[in-house]
Figure 1: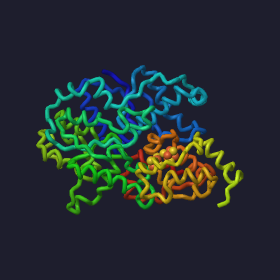
Figure 2 (figure 1 turned 30 degrees about the vertical axis):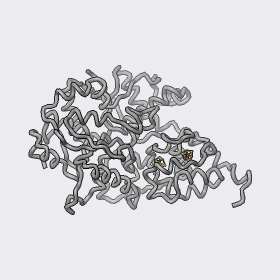
Figure 3 (figure 1 turned 135 degrees about the vertical axis):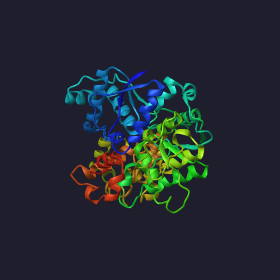
Figure 4 (figure 1 turned 60 degrees about the horizontal axis):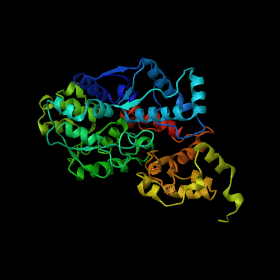
Length: 293
Length: 132
Ligand code: SF4
Ligand code: SF4
C-alpha cells in the first residue's frame, strides 16, 4: 500500500511524536507513506470568505503536486485534512475559482486527487480486525476518551470521515488496540482552537469542559488527531499534576497505536506534553513502554 | 430603534453578504446555533443575536462585539442550522470588514513568551489568518 503523504508544518515542529509514531507503525502495517516532493503549509484554516481565492493557492499547489505523484494523498493532522479536502471540493465544484487559482499557480488541476486521513487507511484499507491481529502489546482495559473535535467531521458534506454527531471510527480503532473506549458527550465539541492566542484565555473554558466530561466517565487518557486539540486540552490542565489533581494525558491516536505495536519511548516521543503520558502505560503494564514517565 | 428600509438595507450589509456568500435574512432565529456553540461563555452576544442585529441593519454593533473574535470557526452551528446558514462565514465577513483596511486584532509582540514557546505552529498560522 503506497500513498502520497502530506505531513504539514506542525508535525515537523511541535508534534514530532505524531509523525514518528505513525511512520514506525506504518512499517509494521505494510503501509508506505511517500512524502510529496513539494509541499507547503496548508494555511491551517479553510478561508470562509467567498470573495477571496488567495488562501486557496497554497493547498491547491500541494494537491497539484500530489496529482503529479499519481497517488491518493494521506494526512495525519485534522486541520491539514480539513483544508485540503475543502479546497479540493472548491476546485471540483467552482469553475471560476478553479480557473483563477490554477492560472495563478500555473498548474492544471481540477480535483483529481483523493485526500484521505490516516484513520481511513486503518479502517478501510487495513481493517480494524487485521490491525487487532498485529497488536503485540494490547492496552487491555485502558479507558480512553476519543476526542474528534471539529476538523475531522465538519462540514459533513465536504470533509466528514464519519457521522458528524455520532462518530465511531476512533472508538473502533481503540477497541482494536484492546482499549476500553469511554462514551462522553463532548467528543465532537470545539476545544477553542486558535482562540487560545486571544488574551484572557477565552478558549480555556471549552477545553476544560471536554477534559472534565471525559474524566467524569472514567477516562485515563484522551486521544486526538489534531495538534491544536492536543495542545488546548493539555494546556487547560497546566499545573494540575503539580497540584496533585487527577490529570488526563492527551496523546495522538498514533502514539497509542505505536505503543500497542510494541514501540517504546524513542518512537512515541512525548516531549512537549504537559500532562506526562508515560504514567498511563505503567498502569496497564505495556512491555515496551513500562518504564516511561 | 426606528426601523425603515434605509436602516435595514445598508451598503455595509450588502458587503457582508458578498464576502460571506450568505443571505442574512434566511435565518429564522430558532437559536439552535447558540444552543450548541462551545464558545458562548466568552461571548457578549450570542451567535443568533449577531445575525439578528445584521438583519436589522445594525452592522456597527455586530462589529463592536467580542463574539466575532471569539468564534472559533468550529462549524458546529452551520452543521446544525435548519436553514443551512453558514454562520461562521458571516462571522468571518465581520472580521474581514475590520481587518481588510489594515487593522489587526492580534499583535504578535503581545503574545506571552511562555505561550509562544509551547503553542503549536498550527495555532499561530490559524490565528494570524483570522486576526490580522
Ligand atoms: S440555527 Fe440557523 S436559523 Fe437558527 S438562529 Fe442560528 S443561524 Fe438562524
Ligand atoms: S463556528 Fe463560531 S459561532 Fe458557530 S458554533 Fe463554532 S464558535 Fe460558535
